[in-house]
Amino acid sequence: LELGASLHLALERDEFELHYQPQVSLRSGRVVGLEALLRWRHPDKGLLGPGHFISFAEESGLIIPIGEWVLRRACKQNKAWQDAGLPPLPVAVNISARQCAQQELEAVVRAALADSGLAPHYLELELTESISMADPEHSVPMMERMKAIGVELSIDDFGTGYSNMSYLKRFPIDRLKLDISFVREITTDPGSLAISDAIITMSHSLHLEVVAEGVETEGQLALLAQRQCDIVQGFYFSKPLAADALEALLRADY
Ligand code: G
Ligand code: G
Ligand code: MN
Ligand code: NA
Image 1: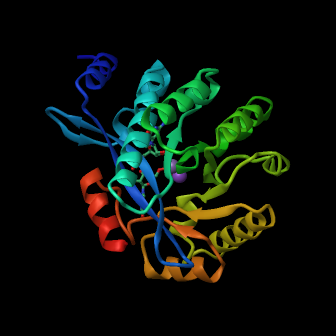
Image 2 (image 1 turned 180 degrees about the vertical axis):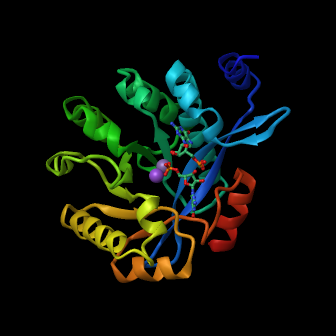
């Protein structure tokens, strides 16, 4: 089968899964959020990450129905955890450029919230820096419509795009996600530390929280804490986990 046909079938056969990676507050040491990450439970090839199919899905437009599935599943799962008595946490969902460009995104988000019963502030949308900055005349009103629904907004992979910083203050966002490339070298490259430090300071001046991505070592964690980073996410705490494993982790953390 051609990849497009396989992805269609995968949706029909319910072969997609969301895995969840915890985000940990540096202040409290507690889990304060989750990022939902898409996986494909392929009948022959096993569990496939987005690297195997997400760019094709974006180019072919299949990211639209797949992205809708992701939003619905993340909201439904998060509501189920809340109903089961777990501490309520926001779940962050990655939104692709094609979804952002769609007028229907607002209706899709509203429907996912309404059908799941999840309160809007427990859903966060991650928009990449390149999407947000590429066409601010479109992205700013889109973000404002999302904030009017009551969802949280973050800018993903921050620091890698060609940001016009003057737009940042116009974005009605809640947090920035410091790109993994800075975190990876933060203990070895003074430039990466300087940029991370500058992004954290600027974010706080703009009343934004900073989430550091890809934290793998004690050393990275210590530097980020020293520079007042708010939240950390990475293999140091946990890989992205299937829903049942994540639930067990939350029960232990609670
Ligand atoms: O763990 P990881 O391999 O899950 O993710 C790889 C890339 O795929 C990341 O850039 C991530 O943002 C992207 N990605 C993961 N899940 C989704 C999703 O549900 N939708 C979109 N558009 N991108 C995703
Ligand atoms: O682009 P985005 O931030 O949405 O993608 C997150 C990606 O980073 C996923 O592929 C996820 O599996 C991966 N990831 C999460 N934590 C770590 C980490 O500590 N190290 C590395 N190398 N990748 C990570
Ligand atoms: Mn992300
Ligand atoms: Na990222």
